[in-house]
Length: 621
Ligand SMILES: C[S@@+](CC[C@H](N)C(=O)[O-])C[C@H]1O[C@@H](n2cnc3c(N)ncnc32)[C@H](O)[C@@H]1O
Image (cartoon, rainbow, N blue to C red):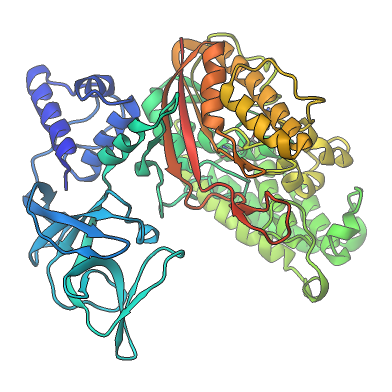
């Protein structure tokens, strides 16, 4: 299934290859079609690969080749369909789209419609998409259909038959269903074509200094995010691996040295290793460093399994009087006594493993066991204790939790060990990215990162999330130091006043609006941005000229003021010596971060904070 633009790109590649015997580079495709960025060119290539028109080779700029054309069909686009209020069903055949036969099946007649409205977003059907419909007059319960009601009003909805009536159900929790005695079905949806071109165009008319381009192809809704070692420990606001990989493939090449200056649990570093990039990772949270190291260090799965089995035998034999209870503040508040004993036995058995990398790897499963067997609500990032009856009944199967996690992790490591590139390296540095971290000036080919959304107190408390695990696994000399992490992270200490020299009009405007309501919150925001500006300066120093720096950022809401962090970064970066080449907006389908909070500080008053994020692409001048 190819859109007009995709067909044009394919034709260009075919023609180019006939003339040169090799494929055009992403940059050549970008220039030929006047695309905003190479990432858009990459998007077209991956669409052509997914649809089977190009071979998937090494993901290198010129490593594409055309395949023999598959059997294709041309399908008429008959007009628009409302995914919202029904609109009059008028069929005006205008254009056609080309689709491979495999994609829609051999049976039936098909037509296509352009979608208007947002009532089907939870089914992955967005305003501007094209849906391919197989003509039929009946549908099964739950199928997404073209339904005509009220004498020629057409709408796209899920159809249910209930108590002798029809329910047309929107896939959008904010909208109500439509009930009718009669519904005429004109077909069922068999294929959705995301219309990237129209979404890219939407952003162009904004009256802003910078343009945000909505690009649903970056959502990766429903895709597996826990492959390899990605699934071995939760961490707040993790990258979607597909986003990390796409940025790496678009803005760096095999053998390059890349860096994630806020590496967290190391998602971008794992991806770097899988596609042959050397990578530095920097973070100021010791638990993050521990996780990132374990996730990126390949270990022979046979050796690992052998040690794991031996560990299970050993742990059963450890007596209560052989263990050492950890000594940190409030341990009895967060753990029941018998849980402490079981955890301490497990820890002792893991510490007896001689091979340090294997010991650390199994310690990661232990760290998750600490989290799940503690008295905390595990669905929260902040430390919140369960209460009442729930706490009384809390009787975690400590060894069972450990086994489940360890076995899942070993399976992930087996895949990683097999596919990690042997000639690439990963170095993880515990450091503050706003300061000198020892990486040489002009030495990095690409920086890919996702900074915190704001200070830890009012956004994600990375330190608090990590505290109990960090205290158990001894990443601090004194475990009581674990409670200080959040103060050291970006924005951890509020600025004393609102005076600053940052060159960003967007920041100035946001600060003024917030300060009118709450001066202290404005100082928090300022402190975060001062720290971020220092990080941008450091990043500029280590990056080679002409190379890319990609930041995945959220525009958070403070006191009902939406802070345009993406635009602020673009402004700050300009002053430092970067050019902002692109701002792409993606939906956050399943990221573990607070989607709702109470910016008004009124209990129960929920307001959406973030379900979208921006990818800011900077280039060092
Ligand atoms: C959004 S998270 C990164 C998550 C990561 N992409 C992943 O997939 O796990 C941001 C990270 O920035 C780190 N951080 C905050 N301030 C920092 C600073 N000044 N220097 C280095 N790291 C910092 C936090 O500890 C946190 O791990």
